[in-house]
Amino acid sequence: MTTEAYIFDAVRTPRGKGKKDGSLHSVKPITLLTTVLNALQQRNQLDTAQVDDIVMGCVTAVGDQGADIAKTAALAADWDEKVAGVTLNRFCASGLEAVNLAAMKVRSGWEDLVVAGGVEAMSRVPMGSDGGAWASDPETNLHTGFMPQASART
Image (tube, rainbow, N blue to C red; front, side, top):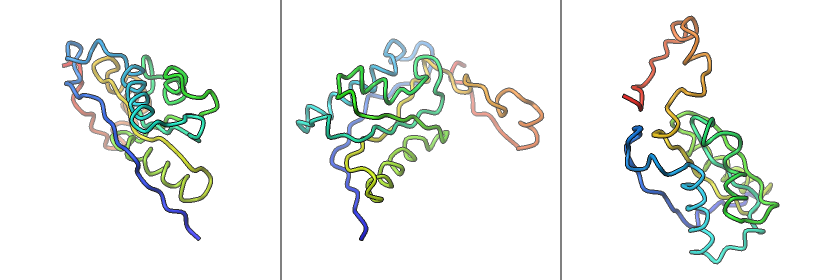
């Protein structure tokens, strides 16, 4: 028997240009995410103790959006301290992968209620600032045919 996974609500933050002087530059990634979590809680009268996990995609999990921003945001939003959180990186598909992973957790019967999405503040944390062989090793860059995107700071 397969358990179905359903989307109960969807919330997003405003969008801006990922530039150092962009309209959202002064807004921290943690603030973006806690705003979404608080909206979900209020709109659905959500008892956060019922949430098994928060899965967030984040392309560049360093600086303001480093460590495990999913768990940090749960705590900063005053959600139940037992709510788990995990942050994953699948580049531009990070938020989508987070939703897919959440659905898999529910469909497998492993968890019942998972919050999923993505967070990124390119005006505060430039693309590629987490390093890695693609960004910092010319040999790997050339061998893999990696073509970097334009810098958010230009």
